[in-house]
Length: 318
Image (cartoon, rainbow, N blue to C red; front, side, top):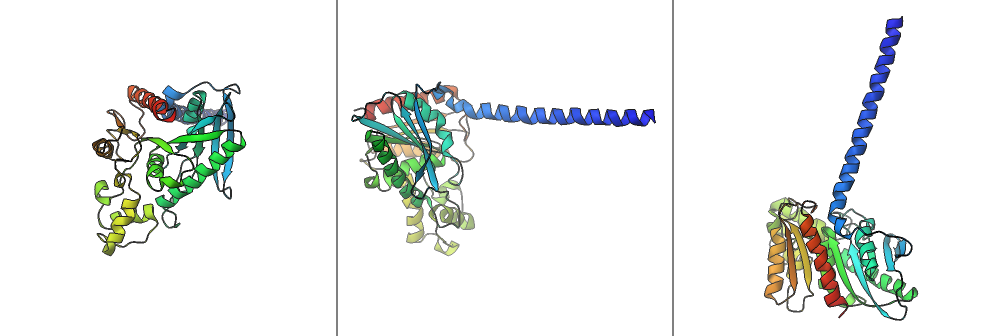
């Protein structure tokens, strides 16, 4: 009887130890993962307090299905022209959240810029909402942000648009697709690992895979029989930033990981190279040791945000 009782207690003890170890391992994993994901933002991770400014969260766009956060620096002069930065989050066009903008929002607010970190309706195959729709939605978002700033006593003179991954593509297209719809002029764009083309051939896609890509991004219903048709080609070219390169393009900062397995890094060099050939101020920063998450090149992250700072001063405060 005593032996059985001892065995039962021992089993319970071992189970508790194993459970505690598992929980500890899981917690350690998530803490390490969280620290890893914060690495790209070390350069712009600033201390923030009520003295730094005000953050207005979950402000609605339109019917309230889309939200944004607004970072307003302390001490801004009302009645004086101010400068806006709109940040668009990552997420493969279908996920992610405006909360990703907390680092860039706080950082730029401490430098005197108003920052709007914005959501957008997800681009999901079959919902009839494509990348072009998301960009048009962003024009409305910017208009709402500018009006909100006006309510707070600030007139917006100009803006920069930035984003990461999918957000970077949307930032480029915001400056490209219908710039006249922007409530204030866009002075430059900064982006990291943004797809600059949706030409399936540049992604190595053929047949059904190619059609699936184009349909998802454009909310169309092409079939393989449509490949090569003018309508098919126009559909993906319309949402490809590399289709809008010209002498009137705004300056661009672009960053790409040379070990990226999701977005071909050659898109960055081809895109910025074409911009430079058109006479546009374009800066390419390549991360030799990083993949899509840009976490293994601290010096390049510093260079990227130093360049953002210099472009802000050069183009926004001119």
